[in-house]
Structure formats: structure tokens, C-alpha cells
Length: 515
Image (cartoon, rainbow, N blue to C red; front, side):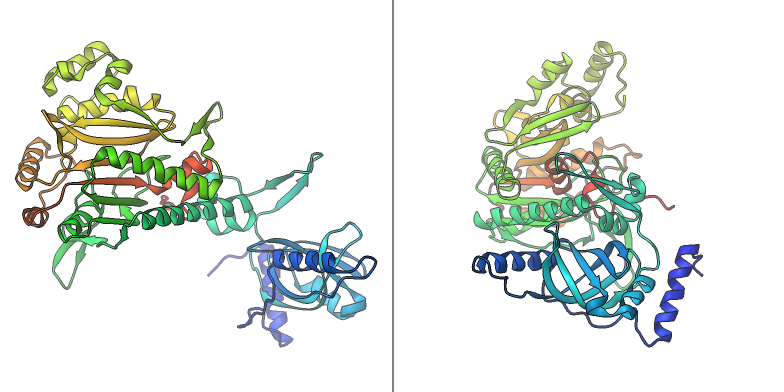
């Protein structure tokens, strides 16, 4: 049984009293003629249309919303309600309602309750658009009070919000309460939704076909990550939550779809950080007859389109922490940095001079004694270590880091004349990875050999393995057109564009440990 607080017990008692009087505190039906902002706009329009010196035409409205503030003043009550569009004031007066109904409101309605109110729109002496209430009813009684909040109007007219719900973990655990008391949080998620819609509109406008691929897969692939595993009882086999859409989307290229994309959830059984969550929203697209250079250009155009349509600007501020602020510009062209040259400039190591894992490991520990890469790591993983430790923190403005080692890019095509390097880029901004793209490998014999080589390179303890996918190889053997592929974490893009330091701030319900 729920353990109620003293205040909650009082509210539960009010529910019982309402029902004893034949009033249902959770009625089945609600009516609304206007949102709060529509009612205010209708009043403004009526005032503008009225002849000079004449009263405006009556604006009747039925509004619904959550009670956020109330101020009883004897025979009058002023209260503010909030709906999805904003706040509006209600004015309850004995003259219209009678003393009994005003007393009933003051006794039975609390902050957080949902109310339906009908009446005429008016303006108070201070000019505030207000509904003069002629009738009202309870729509939903709030048993638990929301965290207290208060708005303070500053001298410059701006509003400073004081909210009790400020603890980041509590806000993530009780997102419903966070959204209810913090309008800026609601706005963040509206912007996130608009970002996804803008991406979809851009790709649709470039003749890409949106598709859906399996979330539950008999074999995971398309990335090096530890999967979540489950079991299908009827099929009597283990299944995996997908870690990527890639191998299924590229199967569609074999089937003669030339431009395909998917926006959906991926699942990786990995650690949680400011930029990692076990489930996240991913965009992937594959473009027949294109290469990674064309995908770079399309990426610039797509991000610019999102910035323009959702935010009206390509310049953004991103606060990495209390002391570090970046001013980012997503205008094209983005900076381009060749990986080998970038590593030379930031670490002093030329990876071309160290063709084996052993020699590269010795170079790293010799030149940078404080750094401790895994002595058993493959050469590609050591190069990735150099990028993470030295190069990545310098990639602040939107940047394409390109030409990656072959042994950490098993699905990318090698550069002509350089079999150890592949045509791959990653997009960076504010010092962390935003997207990843290849000129995709479409040679089934080469692909099979790489799967075999990777299997040899993995240690028994290594969890982030890329398994052999025989069906994908079979699809490739039917013939796959040359193509460019792209993947981007939508959550990370939302972080950058809404200036949120943690991925939790752009996920409605992030993964959390049990309380």
C-alpha cells in the first residue's frame, strides 16, 4: 500500500468528499473550445476589430489546464492555469458564480489539479488577458503536490524561474514532474522533435525512402558493440536487440532501392556517460553510387537545413562546463582534417612509421609516458586511442576527420593504392563524435576476408566484437552497387543544438540505476 504524506492524505480525503457529494473527481469527458493562447489571440483580435470607443465583441471560451497558482481575495479568486500552449488567468467572482461555488473552489481545488472553466474573455485593470469564469468543474484531482515553483519578474521584464526540482538525477527519474514544472524542459523536447522532423523532411526531399528494419535480430552487426541478448521461445533461439541498422539497410541496396534511411532506436550494452545511453536514437542512410566525399557534402547540407528550419541560425553556443563555452558555426564547409596528419600535429606520432601494433604501442608509451593504452590492443585500436587522447579534444568547430585505419573499419572501402586505409570520416563538434560515414565496401570476397581477419584479432575477453554475418555476405554476392553510408546519433545533435551537457537532458526517460 502507498504511504501517503500528510498533504496527500488531505487530498485523498477531498476525493472521498467529492464522491460523497456525487461529484466525480476524474470525469470521463472534458470539453475545450480554445487553448490558453488561442483564447488570448481571440480576445486580441476582437479588440482590434472593435470600432474606436466601442466595446469588443464577446469572446466565449471553455479552457482546460492545470492550476499553477491561486490567490483568494474574499469574494474574488484569481488563479492561473497552464495547458500545453502556455498560461492564462482565471477570474472567479461571487457575482457570476455565487458564494457557494466560490467557497467550493477554495475548499476543493488545490495546486496541480486539472480544471475545466467556461466564461467570457476580458482584461484586468493591469491589462492581463483573463477568463471571467461562469462555470467550472474538476477534471483530475492531483493527489501529490508538484514540486514548488515560483516565477520572479526582474527589472528588465524577464522572468526568472525558481524550481524545487533541480537535482539532475531526480529530474531524470521523475521526468513527468520535471516537465510539469519546467517549461524550458518541455521546450527542449519540442525542439528535439522538430530536429527529427527536419531531418526526415530533408532526406525525403532528396529522394530517400524511409524504411523500417528489424529491432530483434538473429545476429547483431554493423558496429563493434556488446549487444543485449534475449531468447525467443517459439523459435527456440537467442535473439539480439540491434546495435545498428547498417547491414539490413545495405541489403536493400542489393534489392535495388538506391536511397534508403531509417530513424529509430539502437541498443548497446555499454557504459553510461554524458554522451552514452544504452538505448539511443540513430539516423542511418545509404546512397547508391555515392562515396564518402559526396556524403560529407550532404551532411553539411542536412545539418544546415536543420539549423535553419528549427532554430533560424547556424551559430550556437555550447557550454561544455561552467568554465568552457564554445561558439559553434555549422555553416558549410566544415573543417576537414586527415587523421594521420591530425595525430602527428597533436601527439607527435606518425602512425605510418609504425606498421605493427607492437611498434605503435612502444612509440606511444615512449613519447607519452603518462598514457597507458592496452598493450594487447590491435593497431587500429591504438590509433583510435591516439585520436581519443590527443586529437578529439581539439575538434571544437564542426570538423570531418577522415581516412581511418582498415582494421577498425571492417565495412568501409580501402583507398585506392593504400590498402591499410579506408574511405571513412567521422564528424566532430565541441570535442566529441557526432556522426560516422564510409564509402561502403561492396566486394563480397574482401568483406568475408575482413570478417575472418577481425575474428583473429579479437581477444577472448573482448566484448565489442563484429561477428561474421553469412546472410549479409550472401546478399553481397548477388551484387551491391557502390554506395556511401552515414550514421548519426540524433541525441548528440540535440545536445549540441539545445546546449545540454548531458544526453540525459535530451532523453525523456534515460537509463538509470534502480533507486
